[in-house]
Amino acid sequence: MKNFKLNESDILSNQNWDFPTDTIYGPGRIKEIGQLCQNNNIKNPLIVSDSGSKNLSFIKNLETLLSEKDIKCSFYFEISPNPRDDEIAKGCAQFKNGQHDAIIAIGGGSAMDGGKAICLTVNSEIPLWDLEFEQTPKEITKENAFPKIITIPTTAGTGAETEITAMVTHLEKGMKFCIWHPDVRPLFTLVDPELTLELPSNLTAWTGVDALVHSIEGYCVPGFHPLCDGAAIESLNLISKSLVLAVEEPQNLLARGGMIVGSYLGGISFLKGLGNVHSISHMIGAEFNTHHGLTNAIVLPVVLRYNLIGMEEKVQRMSEAMQFENHSVDSFIKNIESILDRVNIPKSLSEINVPEDCAKRIAEKAMLDQAYATNPKKASLDELEAIVLQSIKKAR
Image (cartoon, rainbow, N blue to C red):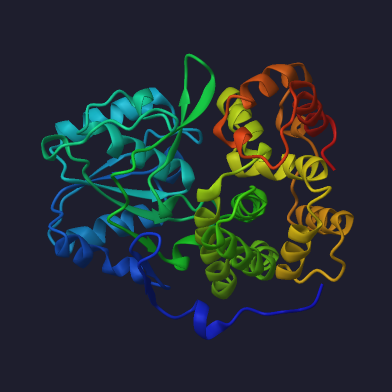
């Protein structure tokens, strides 16, 4: 692979974008959060984050920055790595009891999904599962308008900051579902690469490969969508230059910037859809509470081997974007596997305690997932079960 480098003057300079949502990007821009809240008449936000972030410095820093502008807040940390319906209900109760006027969702994808799910349900009083993606959207009036929501990513992985969809685990069914409403978007997202400097190397790798998967799967979804496809290709370009460096040099702000912008673009790319890496990973996460990015990373090579034959033109464009030298399907998969090896991704789901006897059950559930419908090849139950089983035994 050729040694192409990131453009420092681009990655480390402040930028404001208004697509797909108002975006405030740049190192250190978290310092603007108090003034931004004031500008938008936010006086008492509920800060939603995941349980693992409670004692991290960005939480205390956020509280301090808000208090400096006389903005009070409270915190809701009861969000699991795979957010659950009961946790969303508790968050809604805290929002109402605290008379909050907005939500700031800060953290990784689970924190932002949790915050977005609370936003979608707390004022609308629409039952959570009536907001499932394939349901007809319910009417929202001024009387039950969605609260303002701000998204702040602290990992470079999910791209969840760019829009309002949220993945939530249905406890009774042991499945994940996507919830959303077309009439709401984040008020703005604040994307500050300095917030990712604390991220340990393993989480940098897991979330970083998650971003890689978003861009590969989004780009491979059939259909003409040049906005999403362009975002996917630029995402792959940035990730190929940044991921290994961010894992091996955690304090490298240039690499952190490349990754968080690559992740952001990955979030745009999969507005077009995803594929069977995600349909499988969603259901494994719902049953076994595995880390979403790590699960995606393990499953990725098996799905690529199933999907990419016959997609030579798209593979070449992805390979070129990632600066690989040989652009064949086989070489592309091997190069992806080399990256997974370099960032220490386990070689099978069995290494993260996913048992073989769940393969058929996971495959059946995966066929009900929204991402299954947009996979570039329609897998039968037997084929999907074989993919799951191979991922459990030896994915690469």
